Figure (tube, rainbow, N blue to C red):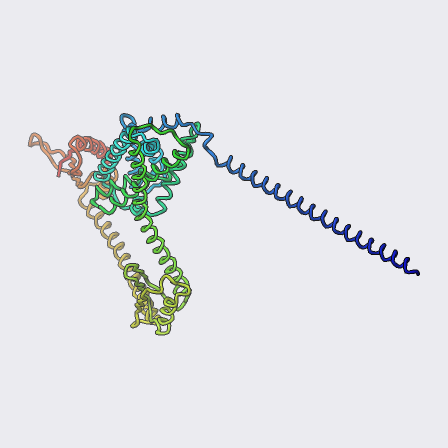
Length: 508
């Protein structure tokens, strides 16, 4: 091959390589473009999906478009006044709730909640603060105070004069509020005001809130505390009622603010801000002790849960231990166990180690375990004592059976002697006195004494006649009219039984 041909061949090879490189670059560029387009498509689809989800939840949770502001304000203001029928409805609902608490009946208590008109002034307070309506705020507070006083007075009178009053679980459940009561009142208030602002009325929600927030039972429990002089019950119940009242009003305030209800215009707008800040401050002040109570209740629940597990796993599961009684004192952090029979030192050490290790019962590791066992009497001795006791009972049963038989024999002898005595003293063909007395008592239940005899009498002191005489004594609680009525009936009955025309009845 000549030099020229070699050069041409080399140039053509280089051109082919360059063409391949250019083609590869173009292919890579197309792939990059396709990847970019794919990413852009995925991004757009993801953004569209996010927008769709966002729109779905917005439409699902947004209730502003379904709000009737004017109707809501008018309805809340209409429920604020407290007079006439509303006052009597409140009194009746307080009586029903008091009876339900006294009878420990949740169903009756729920019924009282449903008819209670206490919600009106509370919603009025939240509305007034939200729209800066000072006049409505005054009316709401006055009517709420009147309702509270009337409710306490009604509950006080019921529990003071009702003879069957005792601490029940329904009453005790309203004297120790905690953080859960705050949450119930707040979310219950949210549900109620949202239902109120909706076009139309969601009655089931309003009833549900009435049940959940439970405004009536705390007031009744406070009245019970006043009637019994128990100030702990009174303070706890009134604290629970205050929690419900404040957080229902607070929920009303927040919802109406979110819905941007129109505010009334006042020359001094700073007054509205002070009222709103005061409401928030009161809510925080109420919530702090409720949180403290909740923490204490939670810790106590942990103690009790570990204590139950300790008794179940370490005591009940051990067949060699016979637990008679037990007690846990949280205040002194002391657990006392009382056993029947002897408890070995190894068992005592094992129980204390299980408690102190804190692996399974961590909340009780600081508690002191005190074990009390009857070391002077073993299981065998207890069994022997039981056997002796059973033998004594068998002997006593035999003695009692013998005495019972003797009593029956004596009773039969007495009846026989009575019949013989009657046969000697009675006229031939006379009615048995024993039978007559028994039948008389069965027929006349108020008869307490009865005797019968035939007497001789003479009206002209020449001729002698016989006169049946019955001497009786009636129950002293009977009136004179009933005594006369019974004596007439007894006279008729005796004439029939002893077959005579005349019977004379005397009082003993």
